[in-house]
Image 1 (cartoon, one colour):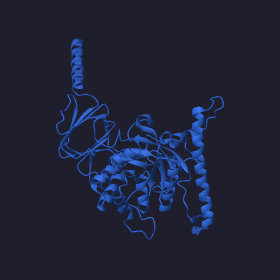
Image 2 (cartoon, rainbow, N blue to C red):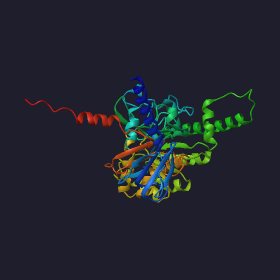
Image 3 (cartoon, rainbow, N blue to C red):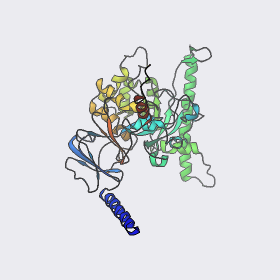
Image 4 (cartoon, rainbow, N blue to C red):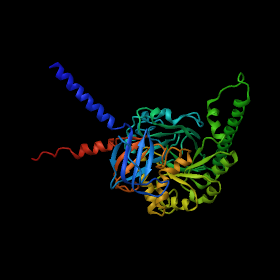
Length: 443
């Protein structure tokens, strides 16, 4: 009896080992799908092979490796995972509960702050966001206000690029420091008095003096960072006193780290561009509500723009009602690279639809798709890893039953870092729970 039991266990073990050997772990092949690599034209009846977290091959005549887990893509479409390049996902859970919000620090200048250190990998927003096709994001600290309206700090800190999957931040990280966040000072004579709940106007001269003071302080900070870099390189180690704030700004003044400038009004954008040109800083404009008014300057200075949601009201009461939706097409027509971002947590999942709205108002579809995939990666120096379906790149992919910019499209498969990732999330759980609730008892 014992011999029979032992033989049975050996047989079960043999079968298990054989099955494991037949399926290579971490190797997938999506076959028969229409592949949109973004870097080139769509591939009909294409195959995408994923191995060791990266894209191994893509094309119409690609052979499937032995042991690969095959996903039948007939009738489906494959796209690069989408990129939200300014968001607070992982930093803010419930906006009304301050204990769950870690977006900014006290003080006007916080360049040493790194967003990755404050991200909560267990945030419920992460699963919700990735279930709509957003596979990686840039988490930006110090970006306050709805849709990027600016924050209390001038330099908010270092924005971190991360995947939307992983148990720890180390598993999720793409680049710890991908950009430095700067909330450009604005000249605004109108303010809201919370004591009287009324708007009031301040003298322009007074507001302008405050603005000039902030800009001069900002210039002084960058100049001190340059001197710090020189001392750090050539100074005496015994006399060198470390300064974390200035140390964090050294890559910015050396042009190695882009400066993500949050500005909305045309005057502020113009002033920020001129400041960064004078300081020789690598600028990316974020927000840019009135970028269309200074598009010639942005084109001349080769400034890329990360736009906020198109589903928004126009900034000024005299603006056209559809200005947020028509501006993307206008900037692209002027030769300015654009990307779309949520500037938020709860609405990051709506990123693909924001781009789709711009298509309805004149933005070419191919440009809209680039604006949520590869353009932001290029702006941040991550295009060698993300943004297109090409061999060697990180396998962040989505498999859909149609156009991902269309709100009715369903996500069928999701890959992050080459791993088939669950699309289960809090929204779906609640939907199923209340959809299946028992019918009320009849009287």
